[in-house]
Image (cartoon, rainbow, N blue to C red; front, side, top):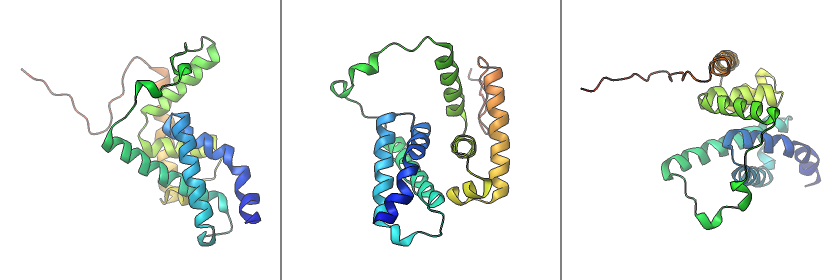
Length: 175
């Protein structure tokens, strides 16, 4: 049990960062990290290799995907009584806060596959091989998704007013 705490405890801040970037909701992200840690403790004896970081991030990613799919099916449920007062606070006016929000919004416009790769490589400083293992995809796919994510992010940040169409979407003329 001590082995789990020594290996996993230093990862918790990184897990929270990744979960918050994926879900964009601090409370849901904390719940996600807790679910992930419960699974890690329950299945510690089943870990795949000597590097617990990729294994733990794989679990977090898979739990997040399941959570997002479930939320998409059910829709958002929010009671007015459950909203904290600080949720109604004013947005920060500092330039750094605005820039950070612009970047988060731009990442939010990326497809989930590209956003996950970008966050794991750029924010969590994982190698391409580690990201490939976490997402269960080939390394070449990681590199191409990362390249497309960076290019798309650059386009979104350079031209924020111009919406970028998602692949496969077309406008129709209705008379």
